[in-house]
Amino acid sequence: MPGGLAQWYSMGSSSFLYTPDSCAAGAACKLVVALHGCLSDNRFVGDRFARESHLNEYADTNKLVILYPQTDISLLRGNPQGCWDWWGYTGGDYAQKSGPQMRAILNEVHALGG
Image (cartoon, rainbow, N blue to C red; front, side, top):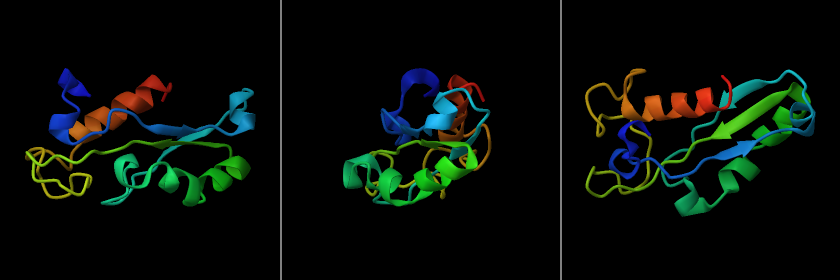
């Protein structure tokens, strides 16, 4: 998280990553970022979104790695349901690449080599 303030921007401290065996063995694979809905981060549903969305099965047959970044509730920011910022609670640039949550996700993508 830019500035190390994950909780301030309602970001979770960890993400889930699904890597098919073929990708782990060195096959050229693409990355998909899957964003959960409100009340669907790991604090509310554990890893159910990652396990039950069927994206992992799709990834197995299509050479895809799936990144599941997580939000966190933030009562101070007006986000008690752990939603991604779709209304501006993290600032005016929330829907742009410069928005804090988007920068955090991009940092994760870059850390994975993307």
